[in-house]
Length: 268
Image 1 (cartoon, helix red, strand yellow):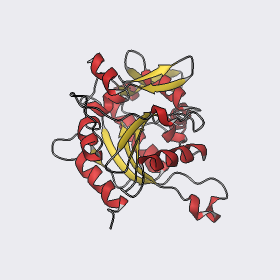
Image 2: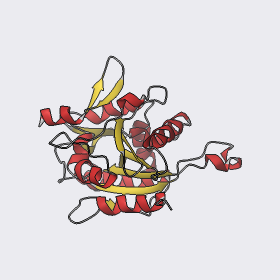
Image 3: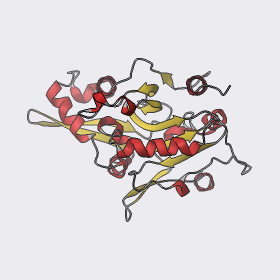
């Protein structure tokens, strides 16, 4: 009998959180409301001096939310480049404009960076979908940096190809599931446990299987297993670097590009 996808999912989360890992598993966060609440708490914690220890009002946080709902993954990527590696949102409080730090890419694996993992997230249903249980989607595993979902993983068991995970992500994007706070995603990973690929986020019409990359180790040998991939690519600091240093903007095509392993090694 093939291993259940739920078992594969649990093993991946256990691997990511094993030992001295900086990832924290958050089984309590399953909805967009919970993600926004968590993001708000981290934003306030990292900006206490700027906020003068006064929490954001609901109307102020609405200003923040409006800045983090992108029309494309490329637009999110432009914002995530930041200013000298620091990513801001801006809030008008009375006559003052407050510049709040969302991410500091100089704080990889330390400083103000918070690393969390969620699973079985329930994207908001569209109007009328209550009568369509087959469209009741749940995401497998998502990796958050300072409360933002930046890496998303879809898993299959060995009876399926990793391409089924790719097609599933493409369908989710086409259905508009990657919106709101999830519009910030920069990197996708798909795996059937024995074969794993990664690729940059893009519109469903732009996703192309030729952009899927297999990880190669220092000896140029493939790393197909999902747990080995997690140890090599998804631990900290590597995962943070993938969505900061190794995700680049193709401004002509207005799309994101994720560097391949040989390109990443050449930059180190």
